[in-house]
Image (cartoon, rainbow, N blue to C red):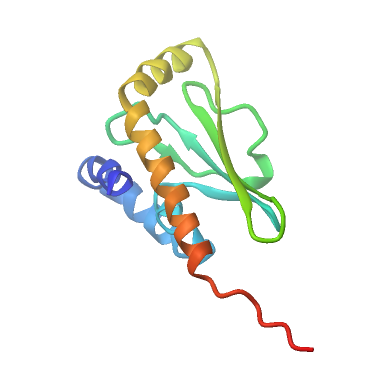
Length: 153
């Protein structure tokens, strides 16, 4: 709900850009869900790790998310922007347990964008944490209801 709420200003203030993100999100793998709608792109998809990326001026009311290209994502962000990368890593812990970890990293293009992002982060930090916890709970629910493979002898 918080991710959907975050996209509302963009729908009102920049409907063309929001509709373009919706169109692009449909071409991303289905499991990305609302992350693709928010402008995230798939940067890596390994057996035990997925990495998503986002470029823009997140601190602006409409988000000002820019298209990201996985091939050039490691390049410096455009002036006045930042890049965010988030991963989810699965580490097996024995036969019936898995540690799920997530990490987010931000790279700002310049001092002005760093200051703007710092203010933005202070405002949204608790909501971002709530989204992260909800995501991890959803992963746990899915893992716990997925039937174990049947091994026949």
